[in-house]
Image (cartoon, rainbow, N blue to C red; front, side):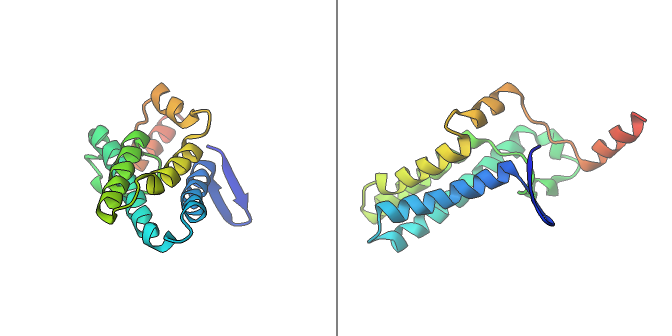
Length: 152
């Protein structure tokens, strides 16, 4: 795993890219919708929250046996384990519903979300390809420690 180290702060690059993607969502929204930015900002936060929650839930459901012994690990949002396609779909659906209820064009929300998705997935689709190549497993910390001690 590649990390960025700034003094005592250690940030995995995957998390840094996600932070940049979220910032891009709001910057693109502000740029495209300066007059109604405050109104749309609430919808974007709900869309992003729903997307991340659904992406994590899809991963947990797909790897349920890994979470059977320690189910609280499903709440470890800082660890790897998101299904990007489910998260992107959920965010887009929530954004479209906010647009429908608010009476404005869906592109005002979907455009910024798409910009964030492109940054998060990478313009070359590296996130998408990495997810397809190898399914991620989520062993507990104890099993990793026991494997490390058993190999000695």
